Amino acid sequence: MTTTDDTDHTDDDTDEGAAAAVIYVYGIVPADVHPEEAATGIHDAPIEIVTHGEIAALVSEIDPGQRLGAPADLQAHARILDGTSHVAPVLPLRFGAVVSDRDAVINELLADHEDEFTSALHELEGCAQYVVKGRYVEETILREIVDESPRATALLEGIRDKPEELTRDARMALGEIIGHALEAKRDTDTRTTVDALSPLTATVTAGDPTHDEDAVQIAVLFEVDRQDELEQAVGELSERWDNRVTMRLLGPMAPYDFIVART
Image 1 (cartoon, rainbow, N blue to C red):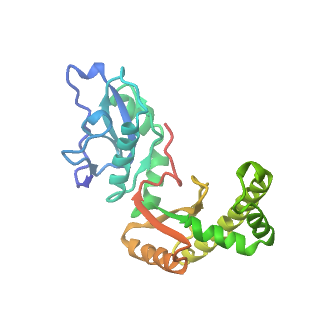
Image 2 (cartoon, rainbow, N blue to C red; image 1 turned 90 degrees about the horizontal axis):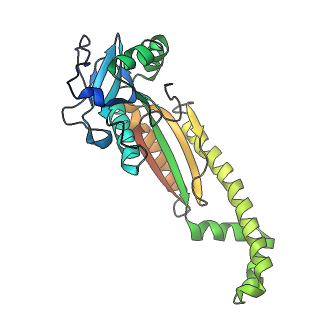
Image 3 (cartoon, rainbow, N blue to C red; image 1 turned 180 degrees about the horizontal axis):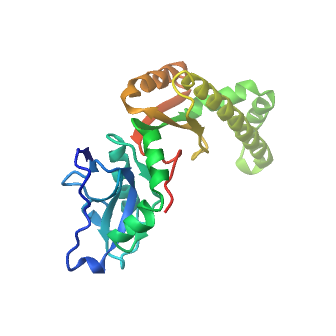
């Protein structure tokens, strides 16, 4: 996506075949944001912009007969929003937002929520979402849990080198201990991560784990031009947890965890 100074143009021209299409809406942006010429979205349709006053919608035409929901559709939706977040504030709409035509984009979406969208875009100016993810190193974290729990140590010794059918109860008990310990460690390590980021920003939200070995999943709303500071903070955590937690920083991306525009 690129920005321009031209805020007077509304791309609502249609051709004779447009009546057979509907309009897919990706998100809301300031009116001076314009798609790059080669930008394409769902079903490889060109990305367009529909403006109303100081705000605009990123849209593309889609065939109403084509079903939405394929992985490629979801990826295209995210690609347009995340790409825009590098250069401008963007309010993401939920996947699947479709209206009948460009006039409906203006009358049913932009005009009805103009003040709300304008205010939210001003608040997001210069910011994007980043996600701090940590994954436990399996061997290290299991050893840590067993070393900290005499009960787990005894169970592990009791099942070592014995047939699974003879140690089923002990294995289940050990699994429960490990599961509870992982939950507690995840809570502690999440708090540690939030504390490490707190000097930089208070706008954080903790997400649910998507994998049993997830240690940390935190979304951060942060200034794009200060990304290096966030990278440094995550890097310091990575060094602190070397060979215990593998840390990653994802972004910039659209602020999915902080605001989703209504449709």
